[in-house]
Image (cartoon, rainbow, N blue to C red; front, side, top):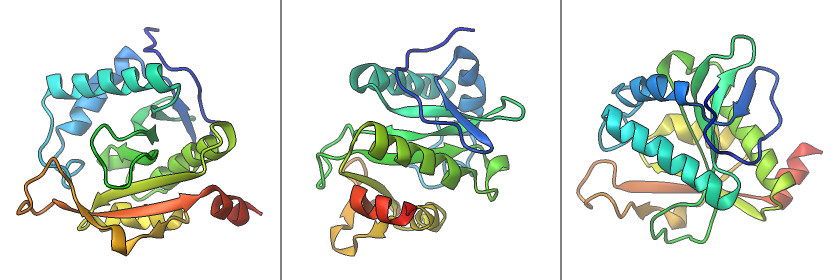
Length: 192
């Protein structure tokens, strides 16, 4: 198996494994990134070359920081279903420095709690292994689906910190973004 570089891994969940990326993930990831449903709250779908470049950036983040966005697979079948994990935004975020929890799953795996389950494992890794004091998440203000995941994770909406994403023109329908935060203290209280 051609394993792309990753250093540390979260614990598996009841149904999912967060694991290093392998070369075989590129094709299903590319198909996922070309799906208009999956990319509804992004400016555009990705070409195969753009999707591969994203995998390369994800792996470079792992190499640089020792953590990042992990490939997610079903434990029962070893089927690749998307990614989740922790990342340091590579743009000038108004709330930086920070670490973000993020996810993207193929549409056929939506509505089954996988995003929440995988993101919870990433949060546990961030707080328990990396000793982060806070983890954030953000999305387009119109992306209710991702905001519901953030809420299920126990993250708090920071209305006063809504912002326009710098990569999008202010008039773009996805420009306005919302920010959610979760402190280690809140995380530990909710786990008791």
